[in-house]
Amino acid sequence: MEKNINFTKEKYSIAGPLIDNSDIEEISKMMKIGWYGKKKYYYVEKFEKIFSSYHNRKYGLMTSNCTSAIQIVLKSINLKKNDEVIVPDITWISTASPIKMMNAKPIFCDVDKTNWCIDHKKVEDLITKKTKAIIAVDLYGNMPEMKKLELICKKNKILLLEDAAEALGSSQNNVKAGKFGKASFFSFHRTKTITTGEGGMILTDDKMIYEKCKFYRDNGRNFKNSYWCDDSFGKFMPSNIQGCLGYSQFKKIKKIIKKKGEILKSYNKYLKELKLIQLNQIKKGSINGAWSVAIVWDESYKKKSDFVIKKLNSKGLPTRPFFFPLSSMKTFSKKDKKSINKISYSISERGICLPSALIITEKEIKDYCIILKKILKD
Ligand SMILES: Cc1ncc(COP(=O)(O)O)c(C=O)c1O
Image 1 (tube, helix red, strand yellow):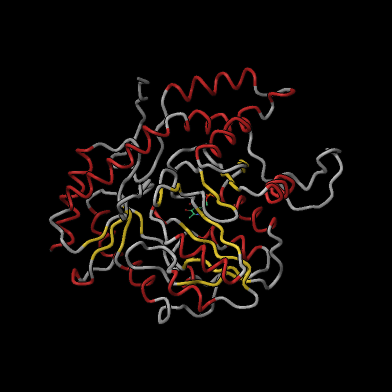
Image 2 (image 1 turned 180 degrees about the vertical axis):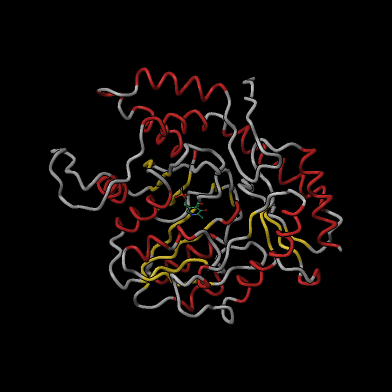
């Protein structure tokens, strides 16, 4: 068993990875062999291979982060100016900002109140002639009704893409998050389930999409004549150092997902006396990778998340707000969609994220829950 390292850590870290000596040893090896000739992207390719195979996908392509992965995929599906892409209103900005960066339009759909993900019942009303794709986001490890979304996309001849940045280890009816849609993307940011510091991955079963993504990942270089570029799109390459850390982290995937599951279980145990709350969804036949545990409390508690965050912080406890509806941000719209995307706005006002770093202890979770319960009940 690898010995964990004693980090100088804050109590109750909100998010953070499991780094041990095996990562340090692998990186040391990379530093010796990973710079020249055939080995210069050795670890990136190794990581791409094991990661795609774990997800039962034909192709994996590592990128500098997940935001760039999304931008590359959108370019590969030929997203054009004024095209529309439907995304859930509640997600991190990176699901939608690459759409805007490409002069296309993100259309914000309300989320479902049980899984906090895009509501398949509301999505069809938003499809127009300009709709090119739907990006389904697996929020905090929860997953939307993927089969239903697949059917809607097929019927309307639009593409499904899966933003699985927060769902490594999740599955729905035995199909892993990251296996849905034309392409999917993951994040390996410092805070994510496995980390490469910064990093991302595109998965697809479509050779043409893979090749286009590979082309756009690296300046639009010609595959045969490396110093000739057939297009200009930017550079989103990962380094061998990132690839190596990804490879090393991924070797511990079972242990890491197990720990994430235990963190969710502990929060369930210590908060169970609060009857009217929702934590990350646990469904039969499915696994929740629980990247971050989130809590949404019932309206009857009559408390807004700002208030709960302030109270927790005043006791020295960290937390994060639940994601804000993107349609409430000026960068996307002049007028918010509060009266339309009612569930998104309501959940966001009644939710927070709980400390879920991989180095958190059971005792820390227990102590945190005692204070949180008191704040909610008072
Ligand atoms: C749902 C979602 N999509 C995309 C991203 C972007 O990931 P990255 O920070 O690697 O660019 C994140 C990261 O927080 C995310 O949570």
